[in-house]
Length: 146
Length: 475
Image 1: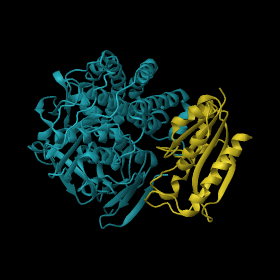
Image 2 (image 1 turned 135 degrees about the horizontal axis):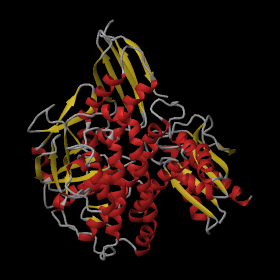
Image 3 (image 1 turned 90 degrees about the horizontal axis):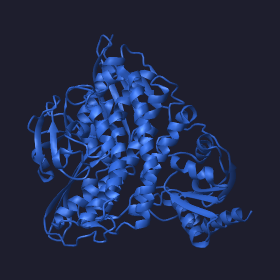
Image 4 (image 1 turned 60 degrees about the horizontal axis):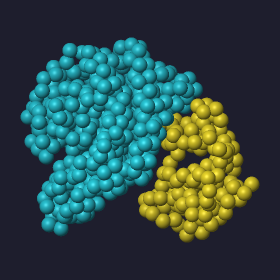
């Protein structure tokens, strides 16, 4: 059945890198029903190619480096293996490319990122990124409503 | 010509950060080679003062690839501190979890890390010599690899709640029984996975013919082998006694209680690596070099108690009169163990008591010391703890598979370098073979030094007076 797959990823023990899983858990508490599947994880791995190929749409949620901590960005992404030397983890674009190459289709995909301020060892989000949690969750909800 | 050194930094498609240096003599011949592990974390030290009951969860953090292996060895060490006999079904469930871990880790090693060399060629374009290159050229193999790893991870998740760093295995057993729905789902999916393992083995046995030179030169020398041998000498990854077998296939030491490991295994440090080297104590170093892992396990066991893997093992044992000595055969052994893990999980899941809810024994610390030994994907894993009266850790020692294999890996790098490198010009395909011999062992440097898990390898070519003449960074 066509559905939306939300892949929210990052390492909660590396400060603001945890915004992805945090947003994923928040969405899980809000969204009910079988049309949206939410997965949280530390990093993207090739095993995700198969579920990506089955989804109608994929929303990736990740932290990124940026000059304005807490800034939320949204962009459509396309399949690509450019620059990939995969061993243990992969980029969202590479997973889309793998899904298409191995399973015949890649879902329409959007990347939501939140610029982090602090990625050193330690749990908890910096104030600016914590403040953006509601915003990135709202952005994901808007995408689901489209 | 002055003496020179080649450095490969970082070593790629392995678990962790390392480099290789190859030293040439005045004639440009390889004189010495070293596998340097350049990372350090020191888990043994910072766990001091923690309650022993926390150790399984703490130790699982050593590695993101094989957390389950550390969880199990650690829990077994804690069982010994509790001095309890854990419920039979807890043993069964831990065994299934350990086999699922071996399945997913072996699939990662073979399909994701090594299959690019095997399918695309050691000399192929390094920009494409990765899993994405395999997806383009051999999509069926790539799909099979992904499916096997996914299946192993799903079993871990179904048993333990999550794929990475689960906390389900605890001192005294496991904290939840297995539900019927999960059991049935795993059993339903097993035949597909067995089919993948069988066709991969069929393909690889033919493919091996193309790698005769690598078989001859990839850490192919006499050493001892060590591993756990179960009841009747059967292949076993959870329990049993330690056994050492020499290069001629003769048993050197057998029936060693895991708690007595220190009487047989010693460790030493080298100035050029953070990875300690283990050796067989009675013979000393370097005479006491041994190997562990899939190759060792299939070399030391007397039997394999699942039907399909038993047939494959019998064929494997025909490779040589005694143990298979080439480390290239680690790949072959890994595939046989994949098949075994799947069959064995089927046997365990079909046991009448597998849904038994009595899965944990409870006690306080009754011993001041405990040793836990299990077979991790890469080889024998030893956790040894001492506690004070309050059950706080006062001392810990971990001996990891990659440490057992350290001496053999170094000797293997030297052998490959001598075979393939002549003169001071570096060739990427030749350097890849130097890396590939390390890859065959599937070392986990995060586990063995407990360091952060970046991937890397550098090869340096140094003159006899230390000048760097050439350097190659893997892309």
